[in-house]
Length: 185
Image (tube, rainbow, N blue to C red; front, side, top):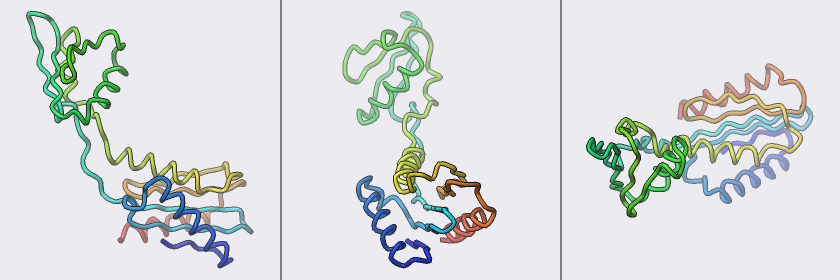
């Protein structure tokens, strides 16, 4: 972790704030490195966070068996991994009403019609979940009045430039430097 600020005490305070927020959100183990640039004279805050690699996205068909029963005109879903049941139900409820999903027991679901194509739908994406948590941390870290935000994130590096005035080219260059540094790690 590197916090750049012309005021050493200010850098220490922001480092403490960042560590506390990461601890509160249980993000420490999910982040490889971080770069922050704070300059109260030019109201700017640049933050770049490199996320650790996550496991692959999980598709519906990876954790459940979908079978179309032609005689009854229903798609029967047998949940193989109960840990994903809440995510499966959430995805189904987004597509259909709750009344359309029949659940005769804990591991079985039924939907009228042929819906075996659901097997390709993502039910859990650890990368997106981590990215969402990192953005949550960033918005807690950013100074409150900094409403002008430029998102410069790449695949594994979440980067934002925040200010309360127009974003200067030098700040964007600083963000690009951080992205390059973190990409090399």
